[in-house]
Length: 303
Image (cartoon, rainbow, N blue to C red; front, side, top):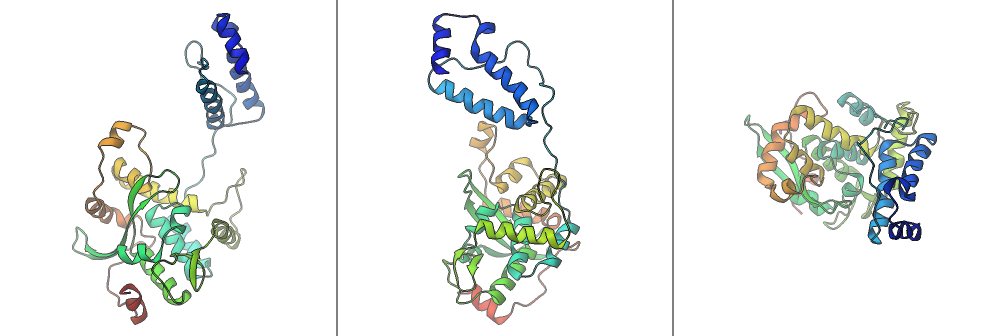
């Protein structure tokens, strides 16, 4: 392929006679036949084009005006989870651990891999009791992390519901807790975190118990990704500033200038999170601190 591109460049063939244009246009037709989505087509064309450019050869560029390629499969729009859906998920959970996982992801937007990498120490040091704008005392967990997928440093939070659920899980389903143990461990005795496959299977079980069948593309309703999407959607609908929301998600800004100039302050982020926290609480009413932690839970958090 590279040799052919090189020979045609040496021969100075006009663009309309070059093989590279034929290849890419034929690939469009192939994608239509195989019912590929536009995003799949674009990603694969970009990979091939980058390979060609890496070797110093002229890359493909679309001739004439940009045109929409008809016939490509439209991306599937998955139905978002609602608070009522999440309440149903919690009702069928068999363990405190899975309830804590669900509420942690719904209130923080953490991806499954980042959630599993959390340690007891992260949770213990992140606990904060702070007042919101209404003067109500809130008990949340502040997490400053680096996203595994993008290596972006970001700050996010667990709300009161998640904090309470995690403390119940630690109190009733964990033994001999150490700071360096995984927050969501494989065994009661701690140690390594539960595997991604284990958390996926737990979500599959929840779908099964609720009779939520996969859609036509094989996607289930209750998944780790959809809880992350719930977090993002709730904050979009609530009107949170895009820069703050994208930061809490651990996303890179598409605009490099904005990425370079936006400096997130954890204290300001915490204040902003508290303003929107009720949009993330699964229960209709906010959870205000009016309860006493058990003695064992107090001992845990005090080390």
